Amino acid sequence: MQISSRFTLAIHIFACIDTFGNECKVTSDFLAGSTNVNPVIIRKILGQLKGAGLIDVARGTGGTTVAKPLDQITFLDVYRAVECVENGDLFHFHDNPNDSCPVGRNIHQILDDKLLRVQSAMEKELASITLEELKQDTEKYIQQECKNNS
Amino acid sequence: MQISSRFTLAIHIFACIDTFGNECKVTSDFLAGSTNVNPVIIRKILGQLKGAGLIDVARGTGGTTVAKPLDQITFLDVYRAVECVENGDLFHFHDNPNDSCPVGRNIHQILDDKLLRVQSAMEKELASITLEELKQDTEKYIQQECKNNS
DNA sequence: CAAGATGTAACAATAAACATTACAACAAAA
DNA sequence: TTTTGTTGTAATGTTTATTGTTACATCTTG
Image (cartoon, rainbow over all chains, first blue to last red; front, side, top):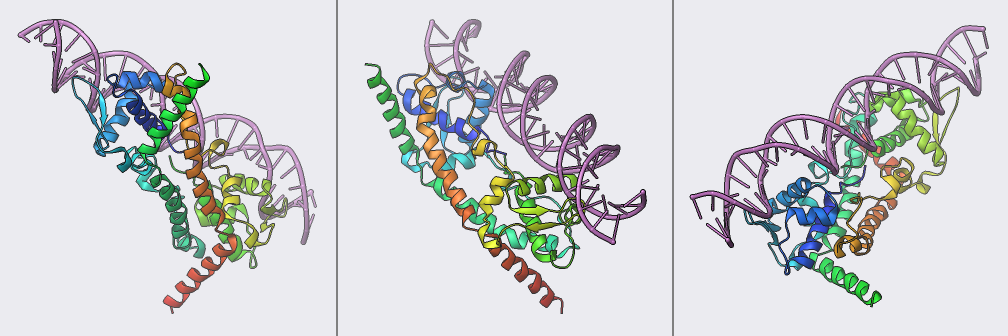
């Protein structure tokens, strides 16, 4: 299965805060409009991002802001915050390999480090992308679009 | 969500062929025993591996063999064969970002290449592991176990 | 032909994602 | 202080993919 859309949603949320945060209040309804996803789903993701210390959400009055400098938040932080994979493991292992078979008994010994290598390679790349880069690119593409329409 | 256990099952299957292929016939029932997974699930995976040209399955008589030299099959080949992710995309993107929002309209432009970078890093690592390495390690750990018991 | 496999269809069970309604708790402005 | 708009969250439903299971036609060889 694919990695939950919670991740791309979370990134989309940050792009919205970057773009609209100065002009207007970024509420869960606003984000629901931009992403085309139910506001309650958005609020759940906001809760996870808040729990990870990446954003602040204003109770009562409403609105979301980023809690840390953008170059200090990576895609990996976001990925981990929204818990895309259970237990942090990218690969789902079959549950009860047969203990009385030499292969079944040793399959974890054999495989686990290899799977971890793959997972680490992926996470390393996630860690190399910051929200600052996201902001730069978001501005770039939106401005490009403006030029094309003038 | 995590990547389907079809992948680790497929690798487990190859480890069994490596280990038992010379001594006995590796049938779907045998593999079901070692993995502790239903034979029909095994047969479906065997069908996918066969479709990708990685193994031969003997109709009627039964039994599975590897179709290519082990150092010419990578974990990536196996991963792709068992179709762990839809459409080949590791990340699930929310379906209909709002076209009338500047961010919603551009989110794919902004994100797609970054997601691809991450996916490629992961696939590159998958491609670096061969079934030859798997076989070596399988033998190693099983022999280690024998020593410990003597 | 008989025996033991594979290939596959059909259906059930489970689990996670995502949607939706509803409402209490909250903070600020009127 | 009441109103207004928002967040937090529970409860429930819908959908989709996974995995399990039964059943049986098909195949190969002895």
